[in-house]
Image (tube, rainbow, N blue to C red; front, side, top):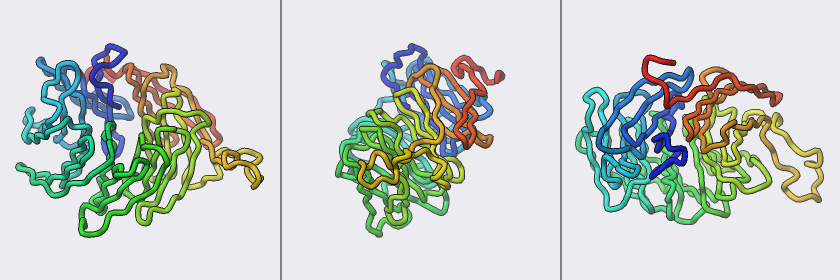
Length: 344
């Protein structure tokens, strides 16, 4: 959730994003960064800077290394630089510079992936990183890119040169030809890999359909309908076993889809009528709920079964419980920006 250079809510939040397993989320602020445990909510770390803001933060699970990119009206680092921060030493230990602004950074224990406007650069994750791969993309202002964190799977997914397509590369075997998935007719707005790297979920600028693909062969496994009208998809996340998917959009809603048992998803009573348009056979979310503030938000599944957490640009944190019948209740609320590391 990139809110730089300024957040309309005026609370100093410039960025929020989950770590690889969604157990934590990191916030870039106009005066530093903060790290929170997702569920239960707790501030774990806070680093205040007096001389500038952070527009992007990427965690590496819960280890001491973070990637930072300057942001906001007064960035602490130039926005064309990536800083690897060692939170034990409380300083940056690696610096990478580029000719254009950095859109996003992805980390795994052996690689640093830097996303620029129309190119992705891959480096070894060592004290003096070495460039190992360069990939071309279409114009990618959102910095879309997914890096599988699994030690047994080194897949990297990103927008291909043709808008609406996704390219998948195995970083452990770059001699192997990359695969390309024709995901959507219009440019991508969101992509997400599951933890194992076996499933890829995508959404386009239209925001009406979410498609799920098998990364091993590019086969489409699911086509899920968020709604009838266009929407901007903010976030897509799988749960731990990839049996469900949650999606947030600018309509102020979060949708939950079943993947393991798609019959749980809702479908029109006219779905079997072959003479009707494809819309009537669509699979709709089995559960949806409105985020009270309706502000820009990201979502992920909570630590407890059948729970979802939502992080909002206005500083609100929500926890929702749902049933497989589609019933939903709000279980928790907090303003995470007002917390301290000794307050839950």
